[in-house]
Length: 195
Image (tube, rainbow, N blue to C red; front, side, top):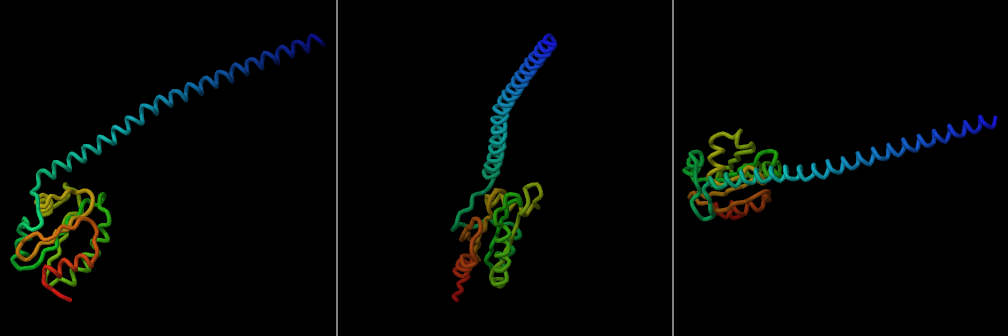
């Protein structure tokens, strides 16, 4: 019986030793997996950062190239007029030209469009409100492309609004969202309306 107990104890010790050995192997495998994960992460994160930064540089580079292709417009100088704008200018109306960026990059464009629609009704006898853009360069019609090139508009960011007086002179450039009162003040000043 005593031999049996010794044999049994020896077997249990052997099993415990084997379990310890297996636990040690599992810990080693986990440690190796963590190490591989750290190596993978330490390589992947910089690679992902480089990729994002490269995309940013390419986008910025493209935008800069597009900007270089455009004619610069300055407040107080004659505004470049397309055929459509020339017709409106011949009617001696003030032109409120808003160039919208692509929908993905447009901040507060819905609010701006709503504001301009309200103001259109108030100034319909003296002004012509034109909105162009709202799509990327690939989806734009020729008139929109020409306007964006002439006015130096880049299709990212905020909308740009150009206010051109009855003589074809660029009087104001507004970037982004503005208030109805701001626009009314500018238009009333150009039109000569006092209220």
